[in-house]
Image (cartoon, rainbow, N blue to C red; front, top):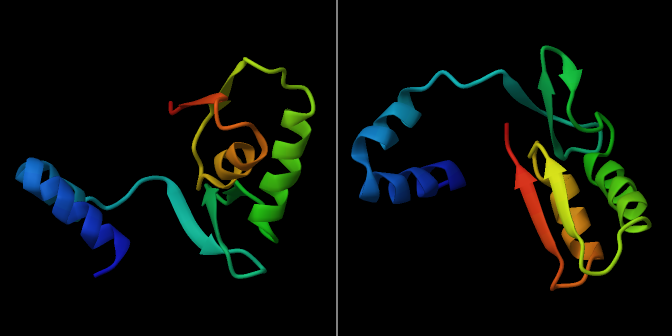
Length: 105
């Protein structure tokens, strides 16, 4: 059973109609494709949301730049989820007690 099926089974245990709607959905505008290094990356209308070459390295560089200007006690707000490479990279670079809020439009 893949991750989608596991998640769908959990959803179905709480809301069978939602699980059915998700299973029958044609999907959204985001297309998942392999990057040059083989990691999943995402595109919308042919435009990359992450690096088409190495999305994790791109996210790590972004997170390093953000941490350089963060101060202790700040709440970090990230707009958009993408495939979460940037959120994972940021989380790994800040202290455990730093709050990261992810805003999904």
